[in-house]
Amino acid sequence: MNILILGSGGREHSLAWAIQQNPKCDKLIVAPGNAGIAQMCDCADINILDGDAVASFSEENAIDFVIVGPEAPLAVGVADRLRDAGLLVFGPSQAAAALEASKSFTKAICDAANAPTAGYGHFTDADAARAYIRANGAPIVVKADGLAAGKGVIVAMTEAEALAAIDDMFDGSFGDAGAEVVIEEFMDGEEASFFVLCDGKTVLPVGTAQDHKRVGDGDTGPNTGGMGAYSPAPVMTDAVTQKALDEIIQPCMDEMAKRGTPFEGVLFVGLMIKDGQPRLVEYNVRFGDPECQTLMMRLGGQVLDLLQACAEHRLSEMNVNWADDHAITIVMAANGYPGSYEKGSVINGLDALAEDSMNMTFHAGTAEKDGQIVAVGGRVLAVTARGDNLSEARDRAYAMTKQIDWAGGFYRNDIGWRAL
Ligand code: AMP
Ligand code: GLY
Image (cartoon, rainbow, N blue to C red):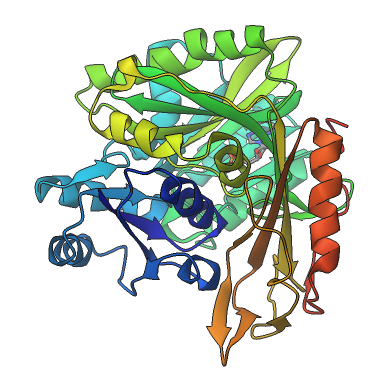
């Protein structure tokens, strides 16, 4: 089978790494990829937001299966374009990708499915939004309706902060994403990410993880795309997992199918858990990054069979064979991230690192220049290790970070603290 993966992050490096272990994988190409991916397979410089370009590249290269990594191509309908061209695709349609691209859409689906989530109001008018905030008080959560690259959510601890967020969003600082807002009840509890495959009908769990969104140790500083993750998430007990499936996920997937827009792909379910009761925080329509790296470490080559079965609507035939262990990812980011950061600093020491089923350094924002690996993005490396327990995995991963010689980067020292 000839496979094309779209994306260039640590998520896509880990997907490529796992998929290449499956004997069914004949040829693997990642577009656009990064320097780490280029060490294991071909990379192709195509615009992955251009469905026509991806379709013709796939035809020219006899691709059998396209796996879409990030949300942006999904939100503009690249998966639909590829399906129209007769390709087998892993990734939801543009209509189903609205579960990530529009917060008000997801809230409406939850309402129809009777799924537990935060109470909310949906506004296109700033005065009405302000009145709702004054009536409900703080803490309260203000969200831009559309995709805002992870910056569209303000968890306001005071009414003044919430009102300021409304001013910002209606002043256009979030672009079109801010012309509509969802204002939500603040939920407290412990967050976890639950990943399930859905083929439009059958839901198959593929793992749980916990992310670390803040840039600094002790969960301080601004939000990032994620500074580290571990899997499994201990808060996701069997009982919580079953409730999330029965009360939230299956009813929402049934509602999507009923509307004629079945969801086909991986659903990243952000949950808030309190007193054993999960409530939905958000859906994303792709694997999380860096959560994916921990899942791929534990799933290995079978992930290709699972993603293919999902795309072929055969999930009801499938089982997931879990490695009964733990994985952790430490993200190394460029100094300054998530603000402006320097590009071009050289990373040494990567060649000496172990790369096997227990230890992998996945690349994100890297490029090769004059035979050296240089940093070209905010999140640059995802140092990942497995262990029989989380502390063993953590010690192994931190030992690897110490072998990496990169003056231009930093990482959090406390990934996994909540579970440990
Ligand atoms: P989202 O982009 O919707 O995942 O929101 C980003 C983060 O904001 C979440 O991971 C939560 O930590 C927080 N958040 C979002 N919605 C709520 C809510 N209703 N109550 C408390 N925290 C929230
Ligand atoms: N790590 C969070 C995300 O991928 O959205």
